[in-house]
Length: 419
Ligand code: APR
Image (cartoon, rainbow, N blue to C red; front, top):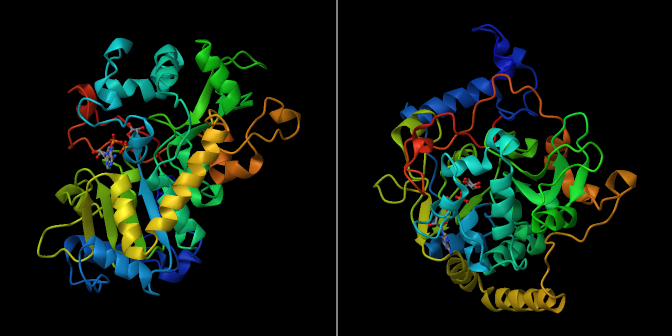
């Protein structure tokens, strides 16, 4: 019985005619049905004679990607982003040596750096997280050039979806439509009481007030512990996360691709979809074990490379360079100036995201507007389901984790979200 696994509907006994899978169009395996996908996966990962995708870029370079975006073949772009796109907004990333968050948690006396984002540790010792939140809380929410580049993609009808690992809500402040946004690791934008029988929601303003008053936020209804809706290690990712992507271009920015299942997204686009990395360092490259499991990484350099491009440098500079190739540079610079001026005029938006619109008494605390909750909101507002055979999402234990060398890197149980 595979009903609890991602292979769920494959519960039929081997040899069952494919038709019995019925209509799989609504499933993660799409119209082709599981067997076809399995065949494609094996041929791709084990090189079993599968037809190799036709290269799409005329050159494996930023200019090649620019020409592709300008062509009529580039219909929908998916962006995958991480903390590196917010560092120029003054928010540290996690693993950059020295400046990354995980290198600066000594004062919290943690058993290992990632404990601060672990749900089990949080429930027993919430203080370190809230102390860190106070320290990290952006003085103001000012999105970067990179955020506004994605806003331009959206305004030009090219953005299919933005998957972000960031919890700083800067994608919302930059004007990305919440319907196009998957906040894979949740967001500070809303908070909920952890008691399954309560789950009262609270707004960012409510949470900010308690963070800065050094109080551990307690529910006003049941005195339970209230946690921002960020996804801690060991918690579920939003259901929208796992929808299959039919994108014609993947742009990955500002992430070390160390955390699963987010990192596996790079392998969930069609094999002929070009993938552009804009990052200070190469990440997400092919790894024999991951390739075997069908999560083939990116190949920038080998003689088999045919679709992956790495532009190494600062995210903002990379986006400006791409915008220039597209003839959008002035437009992007004007957008950034206009939006930053508007934020400054408001005295620096300390509450990020969309202004609170109280909805009914349930949200009398200024809970977030229903619209912006979307699926991810539903996924998080439901009491945590039994995770059963959840495929534990985990950091890639083979790769060194940032910050102190610690047990975390050898701890296969370290997980961030899951099925
Ligand atoms: N321009 C380009 N790249 C940058 C910049 C910048 N200005 N600043 C940092 N980077 C790069 C770093 O070199 C690194 O490769 O961005 C990446 C940031 O990686 P991480 O610090 O690991 O952040 P992220 O990938 O978002 O972490 C993923 O780990 O612990 C969890 O909750 C955490 O969601 C986070 C997840």
